[in-house]
Image (cartoon, rainbow, N blue to C red; front, side, top):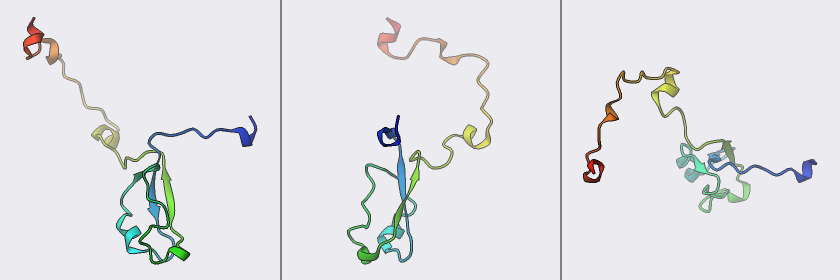
Length: 99
């Protein structure tokens, strides 16, 4: 495939954050810690930006909207031990489970 015909793969969780460059307005500074799905990110320059004519803010791209590890095993690299016996072996508590 030629470079011009190459299709970009759509990543469902592609995210961006705002990265100020030069004089940044208060609105961009207030949104610095947030990641947005790329389809939901505010357009630059922001509507409220007083420096819109000379705004140099850009997007920082990420493969995923999540930041940092979500589970202790991702943080430490160790998985927790599984119980020796399966406690879910019994019937459920619902009335239709006992039928």
